[in-house]
Image 1 (cartoon, rainbow, N blue to C red):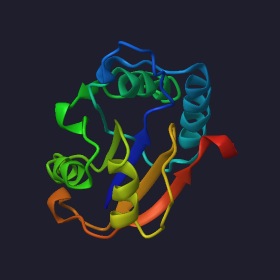
Image 2 (cartoon, rainbow, N blue to C red):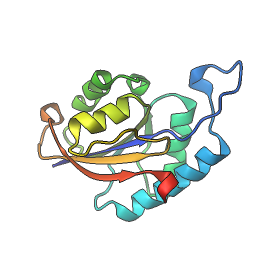
Image 3 (tube, helix red, strand yellow):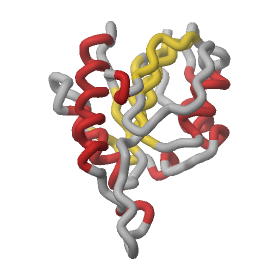
Amino acid sequence: MKHLVLFRHAKSRWDMGVNDRERDLEKIGIERAHKSAKYLRENLNFKLEAWQSSPAKRAQNTAQIAAEYFENPPELILNENLYTFAFFDLLKEVKKLDNSLQNVILFGHNEAFTEFVNRMGNHYIENLPTAGVAVIEFPVDDWKNIEKGTTQLIIKPKLL
């Protein structure tokens, strides 16, 4: 059994003159990332074995906030290929995950995350909001074989 947690980066700033990868988090984004991370920790029934993030500052900072809520989180791995907005690119990365890992959390971006949830989970969502989280369970032993899974949890921080 494989579990994938998709944690969308928190609401980011749109300062003029800042490269997209360098955009930082808004105050409200930081608050909502804390809410989502706390709720995730309280509702997960498995230990996260690997943490990967897009190299974008907003995704890394969201991951750092989330790590505050988990005891001994694994080292955050920056994965250049998670700086994507496309479902198929994200799916390729998930299928490349090490099979020794059962439970992985990824920090990244929309549209890739919302489309992944809708295509690979069994619960349709209009949008995975900023600082939103989705947990999908796949009944396989090999990440390469993931197909339709079961959506275990959707976190929308505005509703917490």
